Image 1 (tube, rainbow, N blue to C red):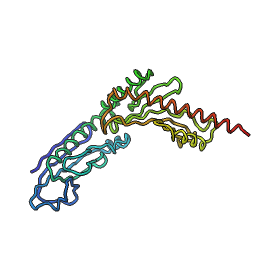
Image 2: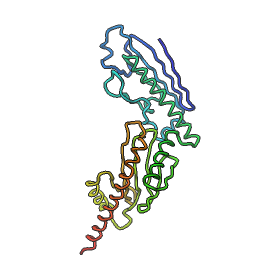
Image 3: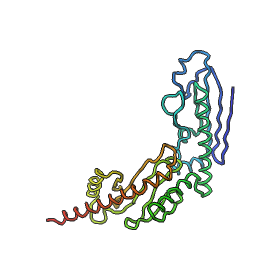
Image 4: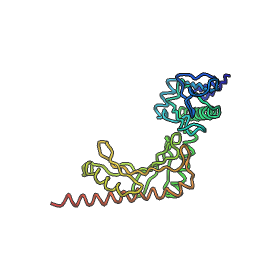
Length: 282
């Protein structure tokens, strides 16, 4: 039996060819609890041929946006031990999958169709200069939370990041990736100090390491750039994989994340004062 299902979006073209066979095929990736070769002769097996077509222009855009590692098929499958994870870069071209259960095949098939549909939407939005729907929705949630809870005016950048000005610390931003990791947020205070201000880079590293050993949320990092800039960052997982966090949860944690950065910067200033005093002592 042959069953074809094709999804043609504005960009990529996905063709799925489903069929049944009693023969175990070499060169196919299998998703089963047992070695298919050990199954009784004549047992019905299910195969899915996956063909994802992309032009060189489309692939260049995917690479530019780092979407090659975006999962098109992932998660637990009933009756299958382990996980099924196929990224965009692995699916483009041809992929052959074998199953001992038709339900598992249908699960993978539906994931692929829905994921390619979303990827096409995002590609179309990017090439037209628009922000993807998922990125816009997630950014607007964070924008409201920053403005309502922290009380700072916030703007949404073209890439979906949130920028705002802290009255004492200066410019801060929240880095988001709605397509690949909607559950993860990174709150950053970039380059608030650097080695050009009289403290050698290796001393800055030692100061940051001392603070990081006791800090609960914030990590201070000395960049490998020419100026040895110091960055404060809080990274949080706020939902299950591939799930956007609730606005209520964000409202509950954003203040704690911001105060953690404020505390770390204060500790950094205290350490600098000690460093200056020690340097001045003959």
